[in-house]
Image (cartoon, rainbow, N blue to C red):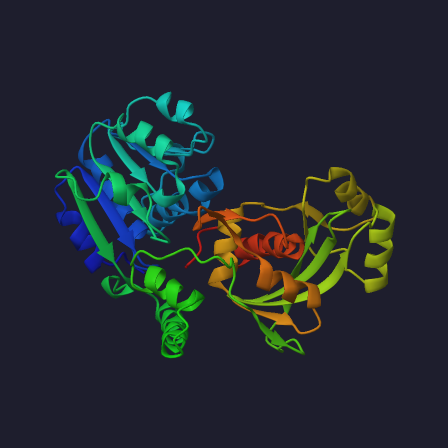
Length: 393
């Protein structure tokens, strides 16, 4: 399939100001449009130094870099010899480069030197001090894109300046959106409208404001909506992954997360305090836990994880990215077994931190043992259903 010129892309190409702040709903095509523009910038002017930054290396690889590679390969323009996988840098024949990076401190951002073009992907997850250190060292264009879960530094520091173009897009400006994704978005809109009709503007109403309409949302105190319950697993669920959060004073939680595309069904297998490696292994044998299915583990207890491996289980280190994990679970339609009483209780009590009465992105470390195990399994499922690439949502 050839690359499609969308309204989002045409609008971005018209922007003449140095800083382009791109606020968008999911599937609006914002990143899919910015990446080809950056490639054209690299080809148009020799020796351009273009830097693409995300919050984490995981975010870099699964987000903008995956889109970049996918675009070049599908267009027949990728040259393996021009790609440096160690430094995540693509060098064009004219000497221009596009490099994918993340920075965990302001100092490292300052030490990265000058950039001619900068792209801050999912900028709302990048700390202001790091972003500012990069922006002030950029001599040319600066691009930012994000879903506006809530107001952040770009709204306060950039929007309204004379050298800033602020643009907002939804899926309606992306004519290339697959019909299946559009249908899924409309189902979510229906959930949001049902909440609004009931006078209960909760999770789905807020989700639709941000990801459907591209508006600034509000962080809700509850991390997840209250999940639906079912007495039996629906037949469409054929595949599953285990998630395991080790504890002792807190419960050790082992969950089984079934998946079918972006639908999840969760079962509670073990939820017990004071359990040792020996007790855990005995309980897993009693439950008949498979040895050839991934068990995504909390690696803060390496000795317990090693005991599982020694006993023949397929225990792997979980991707513990909190933001990515919570986002993925919230993107899914989740149903929990009605017998999973501890998961049901944690789901209702799992909260975000409040500072002076204002809800923040941080999560309260309480009522989270099963929630963590579910998140570990969720990140593996995300990787499986997206082929290790970027999520469609």
